[in-house]
Length: 229
Image (cartoon, rainbow, N blue to C red; front, side, top):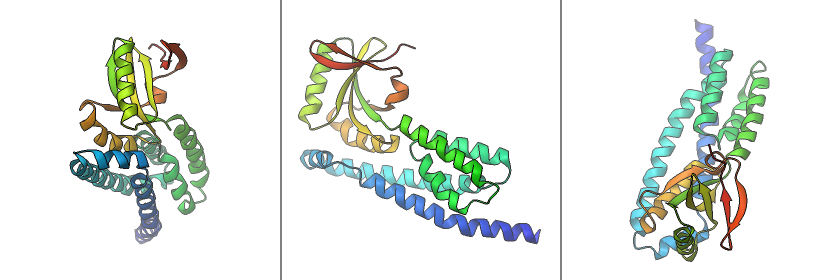
């Protein structure tokens, strides 16, 4: 019993700096991602203060959830019980697909010789997942005619958003704004975008939302046609 308690204490002493580093690294990347164009948009926006307060609140909520998540999952990632470790690795990839590789890379140095090979494989899988989920965008509209979609693209371009894309999906021309490396960054940007576009604008992962997308031209515009489900 004493040996188990000592081992548990040693694990936590190793884990605490890892959690602190991860939270700090991800927060800096998150806060610093706002582009100069988005800053300029906020400066002109009459809803500037409200938007900024909502973004701060959103970040605080997400950071609290992330910290709670890491405190629970990191010890399981370091577990020598294969079922626990595999389950934790799968949950990390599911909840934080864009950040999973960062989490695994920070955990690796404190892993035991027994668990390190498996964590290295998890890291490789997470790198592949990050590449596949590296493009997140905000869907602004879904219209039956290209003419309406063109109006949205012009409106967004005039407001300084880039890239602005049109996707033909399930028979609708859907306009998206921005390209973000993670869902959380896209959600944060959507807070600023909704007041000046539509309140029902939502975030999607382009790779999974538009599988098998192929470029095509229509009325002089480039758009992406998504594969039908």
